[in-house]
Image (cartoon, rainbow, N blue to C red; front, top):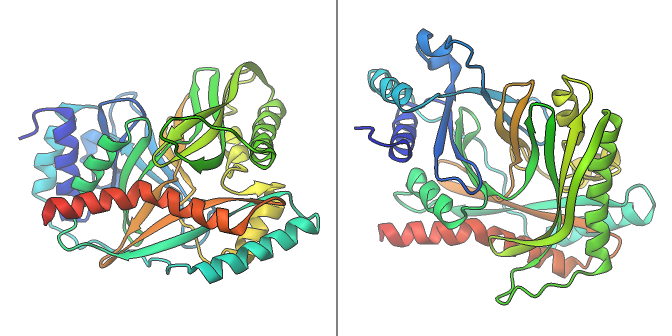
Amino acid sequence: MFQNPHYSCSELSRLLLSKGIPFCLYRFPNDSQFHLAIDKAVLPSVSRERNGEDTDFIIAPFIKNADSQTVLFKKLSGISEIGHLAEFIENLEPKPIIWGTLPESISKDVYMNRIHHYLDEIKSGILSKAILSRVIQIEKPQQFDVTHFYTLLASAYPETFVSLFYIPGMGIWTGATPELLLEKENKTYRTMALASTQPKKAIGDYSWRNKEKEEHRLVQQHIEEVFLKNDCQLTDSKGPYTIESGQVAHLKTDYTFEEKNPDNQNNITDQLHPTPAIGGLPVDASLECIKKYEGYNRNYYSGYLGETNHRDLARLFINLRCMQIGKDKIAIFAGGGISIDSDPEEEWAETNQKSLTLLEIIEETTRHHA
């Protein structure tokens, strides 16, 4: 039944959903292999206690609160373990999916009003930039097959980190993010500044305004300060340069740092997140602005997720271009950076453009089942 890694993981994710078992199916950028991580509590004891294997899959929210907690799953090691696990799971009693509460759609009038609140805070000097996001809620298509949607998403956006996860009480989430938070291998860290957005162009001839360059510079500054504070040496940087992702283009700078002192990984992760690309600057003031005016709990939107052993290995990505799936509806999340030069109409158009990454695949899924 489980003949290759791609087929086995997607088939097993469908089986896990049918049994109501928490899991995450994921694929790294520019990689053809799917991986699977599962709630440790449901694993047979032999799988929980593999010799030396301690790679976790972590799903962290934008901000920890009573509703949104960090979740750890166990990464499965390979096809033989997946095959054995499938037989074990097939014999478990099914549990119903416990859907999460979806945030409501945010209208253009409400969004515009919130932008003006942000701009008032920025003009007062309290902060220089803050991210304002919105929700686009749609009816879930009849016979919506989330595993099929995920497969289409992964195929359409090979350069992104693509995930599908289920957490009881939070429902099902899926997305394709272009943004690396942190990669670590031994003493080497890699990260990126990814900020500023414009619609994708057919000929790829991009120019960037001062407002967009400044927005990107703020993210660069935050990253460099965090690593300097943690006694890491910058060994390489590339950028800013333009990349395309989905229906938009961004400014990107790549960084490589070397660690002088061991065991910094968790400190650096905590200090990087939330980055100015998803929160703002100064960090505390921007988070307060988001809490005051954005009007909903982001939960796992703009949190981070990926593999880690909490010591010398990590591949963590910011959960952007994502959606939360409910029993009858789907909530799609999109946002942008508000600064002193922001044009409210442009910001609204940017969120519409970003939402197309998911909306177009939903339409394709619907046509498939028509």
